[in-house]
Length: 309
Image (tube, rainbow, N blue to C red; front, top):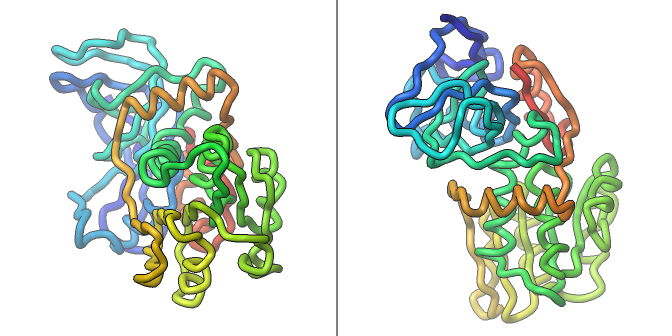
């Protein structure tokens, strides 16, 4: 049986994404076959497609895109326990493959999907949500009463970071462009700085306890942000590393999120409790994936875009 799949056969610009008819996979031991409701776009996938990550993340080509998965269990492999046919699940697939009609997935990477949102919308959660959870709680150690600066709050990760920092009890100051500002306010930011109109340091009325950087930075921007954190504070970046002066007394780290089903299950609980929301900016068919890659590289995407096969 054949299915549609969005694959790259070589590195290159968005034109290398092809929509292939491929055999529907069979679940191996410990795996289930998922009928995909949606995957979601992550900007890192454009870098992966372009070959920018090949030094430490080489691909076996052809390669099916899609790290985020939301779907329904269609078949159970040998020894796979915990789910039954028809269960709604989400997960982060480190081997990708969710940009297709079906994908096989180890049961150890899956959790039950939230009940309170459409299943396709839940595809926006795994990669961005896990990144946000680990940036806020594990590395940022954000706590009640702190002042937190979220640099790049208008992106897919930024919406979850803003909400989780508010959930932790922090005062959240967020940078975002004009088209994202209202969404960032809805997500709980106490102050939104339009970085295109006002330098961040001019808009702050004092130092922050934690800086969470979610966007690539130029050297001047890096140099300008580091002094905004008080002595004893923390800097966490998922993009450009930020190094404060050696005598600043600030802990700085560059992080890469890992797959963690306990963290993902905790995020699902917060969604079903109404504590955090999933902001879907667009829903596109699988055949528009190359378009989304181009829009992202042109800086024209806000929030999370889901891709429906």
